[in-house]
Image: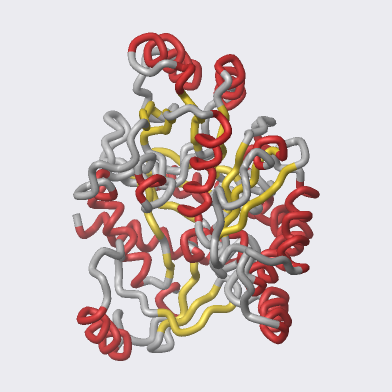
Length: 441
């Protein structure tokens, strides 16, 4: 039984003691679902302060790409720390340059690129937006409903996955117009091809009535939408978006903060669709847990930035660069392939559950970026929001760490080195959690 690893009622006494201390000193704004207090992690397993063992299928929100404390990453960090801990990006060092070279070798944009290093996804998005405005001289942008791009004021202006992320912060950066992300399971437009419908809406409605295409600097999109529900766009949509941008001189920005670095079974999610952006943002899984982000742009674009136009005190930190280089070695060498094969197996196991549970409406994703949407019934497809929250809580009590996304979607983003045996164990825990959560209704 999955609960065999839970030795004390959750949260245990040591966890409760820390939670009591934390309430007095930490911001209440953190979006926490249940009281998990970690003490140690190895690979896909984590233990709380009371000694309870869990499977981590959240991976620090897709950050721990190589698993918790992979020895190769840890050694790279130690080696870098022995040399020096920091030098600002006003100067140079080997690992910083080597990391930029490695990105070029991966060829994410189909031509030579230059990179700007930072610490997080939101900072990488901010840098991409600044670059797009700088090189085009245009003031406007287009984003997508359901998108998540960060919480600082520029990236927040694009974030549209939950209104709570926007509430109380208006006005954010002006000039951003949102359009629907194509969702074949929950179509907003008439017709079977939701991708084509969205493209026609941008071209024939938005550009005709509200937003001059000649004023749009860039379109920012997640190749697979994360926080909005792990939505995989229909075939042809990203290709059509690329063509639309080319027609109007608009830059295309792929936010691969969550979907990149092997998460979908390929180094970058956009590779599944054969589409190249002008600018790409990376973070999360790039450092296996250390804070690092990156703006990747076609060299002719990045070269237009003048000295001092943008910078970052901690960007290119040697410890973080060391972690990123080790991460890329592991992901490129074996973990992206593992994500593809184990992800396909995992999708099959979830579809077995779907046959047994009417509340599972849709299973979707690529690699180990998988969403499982819960519904009240299959006729209406009404989101089962309360049930989703109960399943998260019951999964925790059975030893499985999960997150949600969208309105009622369970998301599965384990470390890329997860095994089939661990997928089987997690599926058993999920079956128990679903049964218990439905019984509580």
